[in-house]
Image 1: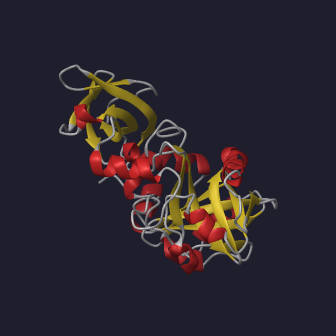
Image 2 (image 1 turned 90 degrees about the vertical axis):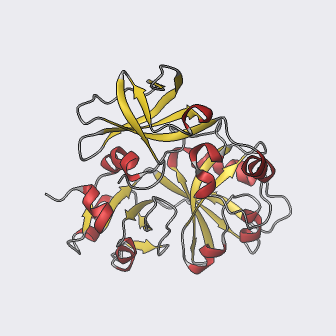
Image 3 (image 1 turned 135 degrees about the vertical axis):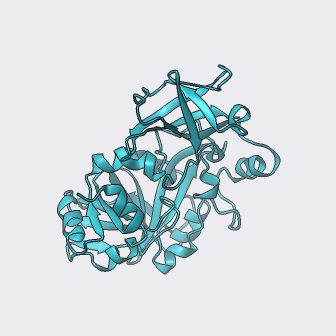
Length: 309
């Protein structure tokens, strides 16, 4: 049986995402207004590309991550389903003179996400029950990705139908996709980073922030951190030995000298059998080391984003 990781590396791994919800932004000023609210440049969105971005507070900390994409005469912001109303209310607070409106998309909907080098082909093969909203984005998983809006709250049949169209496509469940996300290189908002985090801590400045567009909320702090300083903490991916037990969330990560460096934020297991984890660590302790100790076992550090080699 072909593994899910094989499809992500060589074809397209297709996952139903009923944990996501769309905010819809309308009005002639929608792009100009959102350019001042989000960290990402929305210019590619007008060319039917998905863009990964952040909502920051005035202190430059992450309030939410999202995928922005165009649909008809509207702009959609795809966010965590549980956070949708709170994000909508936060952004609406900043709507003053602009001719734009933001609301949670009322009609029942869900999403299908495809990742891998052939993900763009999945978009062209989408069945009629789905609406293809974006061709691809290389910023979501260190690989091409396509996101598809599904009418109704049951995306599983769409994911399975897409996967059945090509031997290089494979479907997985939402839970299985979440279990694989550490190996895929996808830190999760609310788990690995959140409202106490600066974007640089999770490497989000390289994946979700444009440094060539105009001003946005929190920009001053972000620019200062990038040009004048470094974050105190950094997120790192950790790979343990194949025979090691997966550490619990909150497990202490230490240097080989025994000095405590931080704690595990989320845990998974690679398809090769190695436990993998994300951990938030003190930057000064780990920026020049390759190996750490977790729960008494040796482990190596790996880049935060992208498929494990």
